Length: 245
Ligand code: UGA
Ligand code: MN
Image (tube, rainbow, N blue to C red; front, side):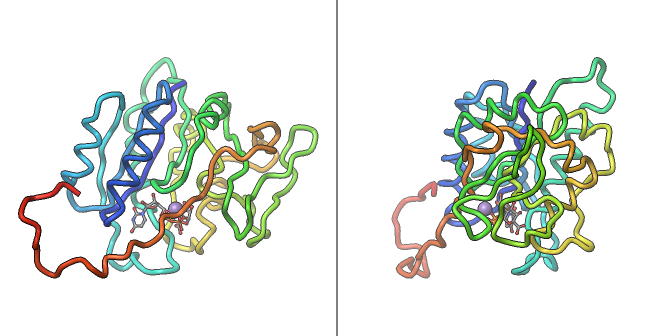
């Protein structure tokens, strides 16, 4: 199966660095289709350059987050992930025979081991695994007994139906196509509940397929990029040539 990685991204000083790191990872994964979704009203030049690189199969989408949703404490990237889902559905819903595929939400700032892609490629419906550096702990993970998920090891809101980060699961393309209404919702979605709200539309805890040796190995990290210090940036351009940043 092809792995479809949906990556929301937005303009800021670290964007080129983040996308460089991610492209360097994805370039090494066979049969990976990168769906880059810009949080922007238009496709930017910077992101377009990445899409055109050799060694990457990439689809470049864009949709701006409405201003009213750009607020601390509100979920991010709802519209962008939905645009990726809509693109996949539109492209594959009527294709016969059904195309084998696996979907994964790959935020632009996380760290992904290559082994993770081997693990997720065997997803039949929905697979799960641990995520490092999240939930106020070194890792969060699904608790597995006799090959089934029976609970969650987490330091944060253990009452979540699926106490898992966006980076902790993959879904088969067929599940996405056979649940055409499953999307990320703005209304009623509390912070941190996006994953649960989405997963409960398409699966149950009993059905989850544990990966990474029964969820005992951390293969992805919820790393976050420090806010850059631009205190010494001049107000007016002082540099003499145009720099591609
Ligand atoms: C956590 C989760 O890991 C995310 O999956 C979840 O979307 C997010 O919380 C949330 O609060 O909604 P965190 O590291 O706090 O992640 O969030 P970011 O990495 O800053 O944003 C998640 C994704 O949305 C990134 O790929 C980022 O590029 C994108 N994003 C963020 C936008 O497209 N637009 C924005 O204005 C902000
Ligand atoms: Mn992040």
